[in-house]
Length: 131
Image (cartoon, rainbow, N blue to C red; front, side, top):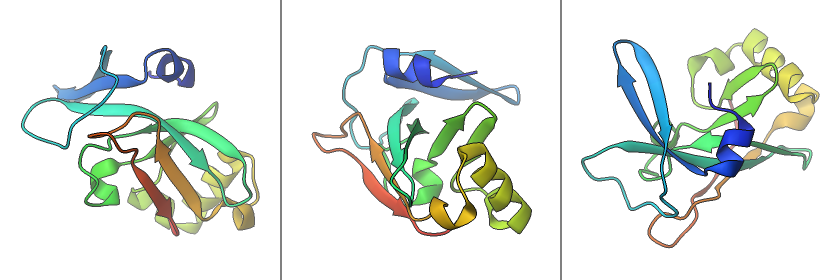
């Protein structure tokens, strides 16, 4: 399973799905280009919670046309916090993720998302107002 330490050491990873499994492998890339046919890449991403605390994780910034494409994920010791999935839309899911992020639910949003790897010379930036 991909860790923050892995992402800090190698900020770009190739992602693929094979036989109902998600697989990643490190790359030497230091910049991405807007999505074209080919492998999907996930990159080191910094998240700023509503209370200003920083967290790390990843997103796929090559297609920034919506959160369903960038699919930002915060990595915590307790598990992954996906910011685009329906699991976060239930009160129980929202409270669980706040617990994993070690913040009160009132301190979690909005969450600023910033890729640490550029796409065509620019860093992806977005804001999640609700999950």
